[in-house]
Length: 266
Picture 1 (cartoon, rainbow, N blue to C red):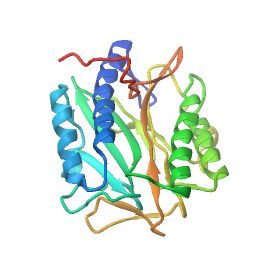
Picture 2 (cartoon, rainbow, N blue to C red; picture 1 turned 135 degrees about the vertical axis):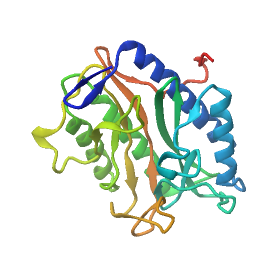
Picture 3 (tube, rainbow, N blue to C red; picture 1 turned 60 degrees about the vertical axis):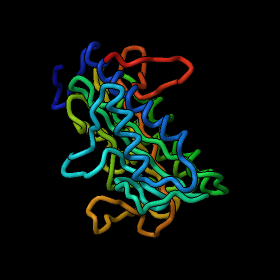
C-alpha cells in the first residue's frame, strides 16, 4: 500500500483481500434482506449479521467503533444512518429500513448498505428507494481514473434533485482500506468542491453512499448520540458500495450475485 497526497493506494493483492471483506458484507446484507418482515426486531437483525459475519471468517467492523454498541446500523423510516438495533424496534408493514454493515477480513475493511422495504411499500417511498439506488450506480459510473470526486458528487446530486429529493450534507462517503474511514471524503453534493476536488487514481478504494431524504436535506442527531434523523421526520434511504478505481473502470467490491457463488476462503 502506498500513499499519494494522503490518499492510500492499494495493490492488486490488497484489493482482492478487500473484495473478500466486501463479499462478507454483501452476503450478510443479502441474508438480512431475506429475513426482513413485519414483526422482526432490529436486535434480531443485528444478531444475524454478527453471527453470519463470524461464520464467514470476518469480524464485524462497527462494533466498538468509537463506542458503537452493535454490529449493524439499522435505521427505520426517518432515521438516516447509525440507528442502534434494539429489542424494542419492531419492523412494521410499510416501513423502510436502511441496513449498513462493515466487516474486517485479514486486516482490510468492507463496507456497504442497502435500504429494504418491510412488506409492501407504496408511492413516494418506492420512488425514494429506486432513485437512491440509481444515484449510487450513477456515482459509480464516474469512478474512473482521471475523473474527480466532484464528478461522482455531481452525478449523484443531479439524479436525486431532478427527482425532487435531497442529498444529506452532514454525512459523506469516504476512502476505505486498512481503516474503515480514509481519505478522500466522497460527498454527494458539489457545492464547495470544484477544481480542488481530489482526482481519482488507480488503486484508490472509495465507499460511495448516497443518503437521500424525501424532504429537507437537514438532519440532526438524537440523544443516544448516534441515530441521525431527518429534521422534518420525512423518510430517508441509504445505499452504499465499496468501489476500487482500476484501469478497467470501477470494480464494485461489495457486489454479490448469489447465482455466481463467490466464496470467502477461511
